[in-house]
Length: 110
Length: 117
Image (cartoon, rainbow over all chains, first blue to last red):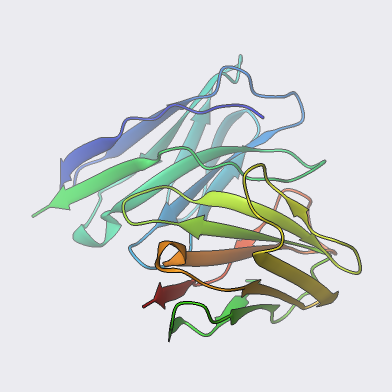
């Protein structure tokens, strides 16, 4: 299973755009890249998923370069409520096991 | 969206007793469910994969006799922590894959806080 590397923490201010990059050098051909958000004492919440290029939904965008060895989660205009831990995970269809890395603790300040 | 529930949300038990945690998929059928454990300020650690009608598959280092998993129906998996000790105190989270949905979609429960005194 592909190992991921993310920054341990990031700081931002309300209204700013935040980009969190994750490297997954050994991602398998069939793996999608999924990002989850987790608040303290809650289960992870799905944010976005993609295979390549760019995916956008109502809360975030996901950029994946052609080699798929990394991905960048973009959160536009963050608010205090976006303070959470963000995990990127390669997600394969065969076994579908999710192996969580350290995640990135995003702290948004007023 | 698909909803996964856990019961109880928090439980306190005495050392040496057993406690059961339920994970339910409320609006979909889940042939596969997963159990995770999370210690404070740490990431989620996969404990086992629970398959409906068959034995669970445990990750390396997880004691199968201590963490009993039963997946008796397409909507319910249970995790029983047997002979609990204070070091078993943790946040237990389950997730489920929709049997009728994409293989790449997995839904997480809200978690169960276990405290062993």
